[in-house]
Image (cartoon, rainbow, N blue to C red; front, side, top):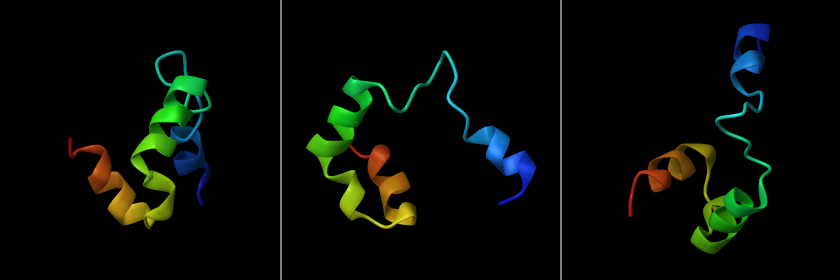
Amino acid sequence: MSMENADLLQKTKLLDYDDCSIQSLISERGWRKFSKYDAIGAVYRP
């Protein structure tokens, strides 16, 4: 991964993906079982 891409994956005040509410949502929706490609699409489906 290039340094430019690594910068895009840093947590911010707007999005802290380690926050317990976000991690809970990930678990509830089962997004960890998907490939990265499918997980991205699943985020946009209700």
